[in-house]
Length: 254
Image 1 (cartoon, rainbow, N blue to C red):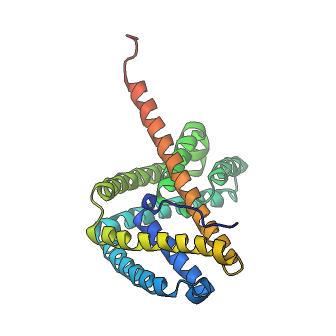
Image 2 (image 1 turned 180 degrees about the horizontal axis):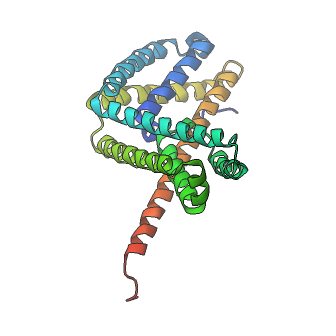
């Protein structure tokens, strides 16, 4: 018997939370509330979603959110510029420079297009990319004139992390009242939806719900993967912090 997967919406950041409900609302519209037998509940859900949209728009317009968006756009710009620099030097007249550019390109390909990653994963990927190139490809970087560019990318990434951490701490301890209230309203409605639909599949069979449940579960699995990746990156960051601390600490007395 198909069932909608349980999912803790509290773990989502505000933007992700909005996107999740946007995706769910779109599914409801495709399959229609009447077919899913949730007509009355859906109208309340739709109103709650509109409240969240307004609350999120206010957060997006806040100065600190703009600062983060600008910092992210700047590091994206530097990353793309560095990639273009590397690609241009694969066509250099000097074969030694061409070879250096191809080696650097191999490292870039290993990380993929980091601009497509979410904030946390992108920060980690850029940090690792810069560290690997600086540690193992110093000569190649010099050959294509990329040392200062990579340094600027690394500095822009660290600046973003600093800005983002300030917001993350603020969001953890002081979620905006508007957004907090909006989430408190819409999440119980979502829980009521899945409880009702899961129950209806038992009573009336899966015919009217099977495709909807499969599609919604795909969305849920996507967000579960996103949260798992974030948790992994956080563990990596904590491990790095610990290693940095032990390297700076005199352990000779042990």
